Image (cartoon, rainbow, N blue to C red):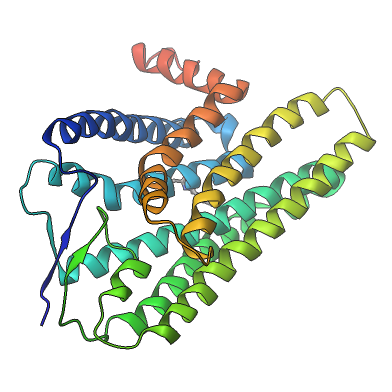
Length: 305
Ligand SMILES: *[C@@H]1O[C@H](CO)[C@@H](O)[C@H](O)[C@H]1NC(C)=O
């Protein structure tokens, strides 16, 4: 019986491991600071209490959680000779990854819907995106993440593990763990592709269609506000591509390429969650002003500007 799994990690060479540790440390620190800054700014600035920014803060929270599932363990492992994780720990990682991943997916759809309502139905925007709808979307995001994660794990936890326990990666994910089971996992593989794969591909297509409609609407009715809308949209679309590119490749691509798989996993755990805050804050004037206001208020709390 297997009671723990062993990660092979990213590299065997000590020098490279130290270099990678430095790289990941900087990225993870950036993820924590950047995303916490967005959450705090949105929470404390009443100018930003609109659906767009509330959803953005939720996205930051999910990004931070997603990266915290894998990055700290990976960094600690650079300094240990045997990179082991317990059976329960491994399945906890799988559960949390799919919980946060599934929620992020729905939040991205909610953000696209919010922009669609704002740009294509401007007169009805406040009634369409009222606070009830916004809260409902966030609840739906967490609910979908939970259901998606539970439905995948339900089939995997009861698999017999008796043989090799080495995972050629730095975290546990379903496609790799299932390969180690002493059973015919063909149907389970199909189930993973059907669940994670179809979910990501369908959401991706839905998002592409909605952003295409929004862009076409802007082109047909150019106005003074469209350049601002366009810059917001570019940010959204970049984030969507960054999230879905690796995701589709890992879960829905039928011919995995081992080396590329590992690289994408790195991308996924430390690069995407860092790029989201950078893309949103650097391109967004309201966000930058809000952060400046927050800083002033911190330096001198009595001048509540
Ligand atoms: C997420 O969105 C909900 C609903 O709009 C909001 O009440 C909540 O404050 C947001 N969470 C964060 C961390 O900003």
